[in-house]
Structure formats: C-alpha cells, structure tokens
Image 1 (tube, helix red, strand yellow):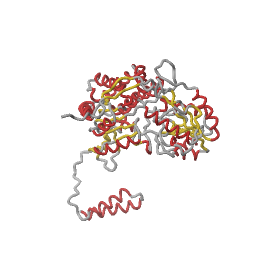
Image 2: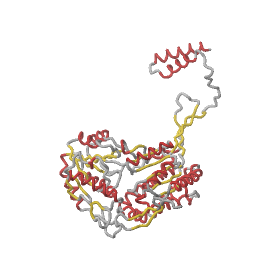
Image 3: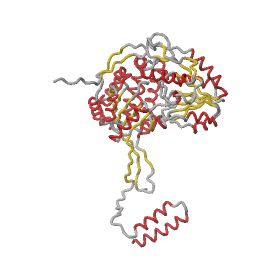
Length: 525
C-alpha cells in the first residue's frame, strides 16, 4: 500500500543574502524533537535551578569570554548569514551581548535575592518576596540580530535559574550551530548538562511546538500577527508571555535642536543594520524652521553611502536585506508613498538585484499622513521625513500609529524635552541620542500599544523569568489560634469597629472607633 509523501520540509536551505551563495542546509526540528528538547532542558534545569548565584555567574563569565575571544569570527558568521556589515555586527551584536553579560554578572543576583518587605499590621509575621525560576522558557527569535536575539533573553533566563529552548528564525538558521557551541562549552565547563540550553530550527510549526510543547514561559520577538498567534497558543496552557512586536519609532527634531547631532542620530536610526532594527527611526518629524537644512544634510550624507557584500573585500556602509519577503515589503511601501506624491531624493528602489538582496539607502520627502509607510513597519534603509509645525503636531503624528516601542526627541531646551517626553506614548524616550536606552541595561526594554507587553533587560527583565512568590512566615513564635469558627453574634460589630479604628483617616473617628471596639469586645465577652 502506498502512502502520501510528507509535505513538510525536512531541511532549511540557507543562502547568503548579499551574494545568493548557498551556505548549506539545516535540519528542521519537528514537534517531537521540540518536545524532546524541552523535556531534556527541564531535566537539566533541576540542578541548574538549585545552583548558587556564584556558579551561574561563572557560567555567564565563560559565555562572555567566548564572545570576546571569538568576536571577529562571530561577526563574520553573522555577516555571512544576515548580510549586515562587520561593523554593524560588532556594534549591534557583540557590544550589546557583552554589555548585557557584564551587567547581569555584576547586578543580577541583587535583583533576584529574596526581598524583605513590610508585613503591615501583622508585626508578628515576616514578609518576603522570593524570585524562583519558572522552569523552562521558550524563546522565539526574528532574523535581524542572529546572535543578540538568541543571547539576550537566554542570559536573563539562565541567571534566574531557568532552562531555555530557542527557536531561531529560519532565515538565519545556518549560524545557530555556531551559537549553540557557546552555551555548550560554558555549561560543560562548570559540570552542567548542555541540554539546559537548546536551539531548535524550523518553520512555523517548530515555533508553535515551542509555545505548546510544555514550556513555562515564552519570550517572543517578531511581527504583530505572529505575536497574536503566540498569545492565542499560550492561552491553552496559560503560560506567561513577553511580546516585543516592533515599532514605528518617531525621531522628533525641534527647531532648537543641535542640527548636526540630530542628523547623525537620524542616519544611525535609519541605516544601522540596513534599517532592520526594531528601534529603527522610521518617522523623522522635523520642525518647519530646520526642515530644509535637515533634508539637505541627510541627502548629502545618504548619497555618499556605499553598499554591497560585507565580506567582499571592499568597505561598505550598508549591507543586504536578510529576507526576500522583507525586500518585497520595503519596495511596496516606498512605491505606495511615491505613487501618492512622496519624492525619493536619494535611492528609492532595489539595487544589485543580480548579486543579492539590496535596497538602496533612501531618503523620502513630501511624505503625507495617507501613505502606508507612515503606519506599517518598513524595516529597511528608508528615511521618511515629515515636516511638522510645532510640538503639538509633532506629538499628534508621533502618537498616531498603533505602535509604541521607542521615541526620540532632539532639543537643547531641557524643559521642552521633559514636556515632550511626557507626551510621547512609548516604552522608552531618548533625548538627544538614538537607541542607547537599550544599552543602559538597568532600564527595562519593551513597548506600549501594539508594540507588545512585558519587559526585557534590567530588574524587570530578570524577574519576568521568575515565579514571584509571596512568603509570610513567623517573626515571633505566637501560636494562639485565630478562632473564627464558630462565630458569635457580636463578632461582626467587633470587626467593624476594629477596622474603623485602624483605618479611619480622621482622628476623632478613630477615637470613636476605639470606644466602639471596647464596647463590642466587652459585650462579646
């Protein structure tokens, strides 16, 4: 009897985005393999979760040494798999990972130790908050930062005592074997089972299996539509989820801004990693008074940018687009804007199509609010410049999307900066710089509105990997029973007057309550 062929792909074909050259194939991990990885991580987590913080710091120190000792090799792997330049790999992947490791090694224990808090009126009891590992955390990564997206959530999860199963994007599956080695070596060096951290590869069903396969929490970074699917799947087992769903971040240039500082921040915000950055400055809102000067300067700088294969032996400023689907999306958004009246004063389309996946560094002006590129995430090297009259219009446009990840304001007036910061609906606001809130690891990272919920980084990111448990135990050995049953006819009045005495904000009412309490107690006797 013949059987129908299995329609599911068994391998992921991998290619260099900048050249189209084949890198090989990576095996797809099906749902059974994912469940096995989760089970193995859970078994390894029993010992890891019981380990002291000093041991966890040693493992993370091994990871840090490996990343630093092999930084150039890792950058080449990243550039080959993602198409980004070596500089952007070093600055956008190695640096944030090293900083997160440094911060976590130095400060992680302080935020995860049991915390003594007030027990209120119950002075005979001791109140403590403990931070216990959840168990195994599933991480689902996008393709824009192959190393950082794997390492960031995993570092926090490990410090909190968890195992981790990571589903990497199929667009950068080739590099995952190299990244897996970092964790394997660090864990084995301290006598722990490397199964504690597993990277699995595949398409949508593999990611679904991570969410549904028995993990105790999920960190998802990706699109809004896929984020909704993750939430729906997580509801089956009622597991907590952190969602980082991208943004449409505004960068506001006020008429009193230091222009050169704002121009270069905008260049960084748009062209780092070819714009494939969740914190990308996707809308540049420039006040009337400096608009023309700003456009002239960014036009000159963007026109001078070089682009090409980051490993081709020639220096380039901007690399390739990782996914051909994303390249199509960038092109469609730019074409829609131009069709509705925008002008591409630099770039505006694909380049080197016979070589790889490239979109030219682009500056769009005369952009209006009816254009899709002002509402949909571009995720490409496209600077969208809008003219605004004043603070009120800038804030209205900045807040006029469903996204709310980050925001930036350039002004030399600290009062105006505070005023505008309060008016921006976003997970973060940066004044007179681009993107550096992510590098301040004590700050939480996450979004508002449709940019997601939950926080990575800092104290909140560590504790998001924990069961935050309330513990109330004895400070004094008082073993007199609180006998509520059977209740008597005077108990309600006794409770009423006691609550009045304790909580009334008015002194005379407290005195009256105390008198009533004495009467109720005497009657009850």
